[in-house]
Length: 221
Image (cartoon, rainbow, N blue to C red; front, side, top):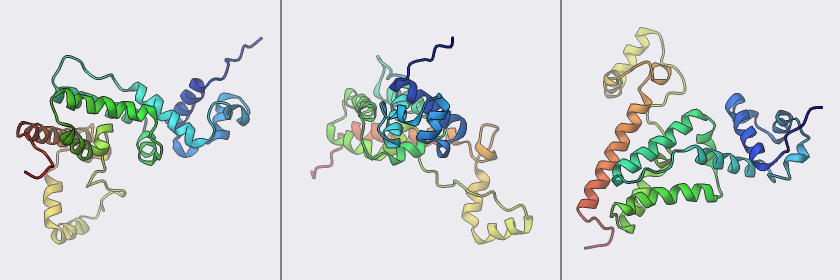
């Protein structure tokens, strides 16, 4: 006789993450999740009231996968490691970015992650005033993602004549695009997203360190 695993909230959330990983966020619905678990849809509502609560719970799973903060190190190393740890998790779960971008309720899991990030700056001697502005500057980068300026929804034209015409019309964009590095890790043969992310993150951390050393404050002198 087959023994069915008892349904609980954790099992529901892990199944939702698995389904979104495998089939994409658009395929995730309460009905589809119930089919995936082999239960009737009503059984899910004992654990999540609706899809929004389901998505909030999936974020909890996401946060739990992020490596814990480093201890016994300087603030810059700790923040950098934490952000890149979050980025690794988001890259494992392509659905995570749009879910994080659309959350309207700040859940304890999200607050906990942000609280730990803020704690790293404060432990490094940052004032609450500077830390406030630092967190605004980091924005979604604190979660390991950011909107890329040169994201292209469609591939560039293949006709050499069209490419030449575009280069003449937009010479500065063409020059910068030609100078970008490319390697096998880049998405669709474009820029190395990871290298670009770390480059910008390091610039920001350097700037934060300089402002901290200067005793920066938002209050008029």
